[in-house]
Length: 438
Image (cartoon, rainbow, N blue to C red; front, side, top):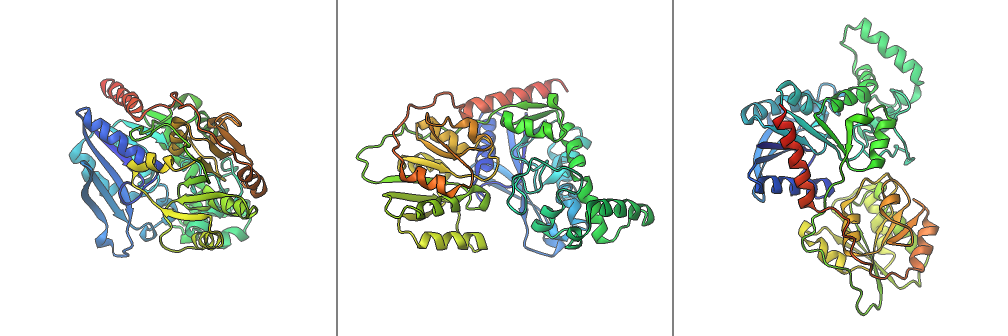
């Protein structure tokens, strides 16, 4: 079969769970004798339309097509955020020329629903993985602009504040006017201007249509996969058909992962592995540890801290004030085992509904205890007092007390964790089933 994977970003430009997972699938599909490639998005810094297009490259033997574009240059950026016709234009020749037997969209963000619509128009079967919550949340985290948890849009303008905060869509006027006024005015404007709305009202119209449009696009896929029962229920709560979504947990790269072993413990080491962003909660760990200055614990933070933004800068100030904390940077994806070997516990102080994070699976697999927020799939992945500790999300005092009283011990390996090999076989069987039925 000819299999094309779509994803919002890819190695080596970006390193994260979805990127590692996509690569693992692509490698195994290729190994099984299939013709494989990955199509991904690259946000171009250029404002010149002549610089937008596709770039052919490869990563570790996997052919990669990069779609370079700048969202801010779209005629209707608020619509292009989730349905970008320019991306579809750039992809048309690629998909028509290659004519894949299956497209597996591992993440829909950035390439947008327009890439999926193009597949439908060309008659290409689509498997769609709900990697996070992007189809029901433009922030993809279900965490509002003011850091409050959200369970999905309550109405068609409920995402306006978040989209304004993220991209500047609709301007500050959107916050000043009540939703009923915006709704009525945008409907009236569409009739009066015959579809040629001023920019502000185009943005309001696009925001109103986002969730319903994406739901229609998702439900046209040949197979829709949620990574957890929790995630499936969240989508069902937001109007998606229960029978359309199949729960299929993803697999773990087990190569290089060895059983946890705490020989000669003199000082406890806690590791955090992930993006150094607010919703991942590294600041919770730093503030919690600062409450117990005499606690003999080292905290190692793994993640990209290059560049500067207000959140990264605030983390660096907290780190500089505590010599027990070290910023470790990123590490090659095949060195997860080496990093976990140094630890006595993994910490995931998430402030959002984490969805089956692979680093948690890796810790469970080797028997490394986990400290995690009692939220999302973490609340079911970790059994409090058995393979780790569940703590209130965002509660600095509770995390500090847990760290100060930490007495971890290595656990038996969790052999129930699905391997990447097993997951790839499951998906290849799905691809074959869909292809055979066409």
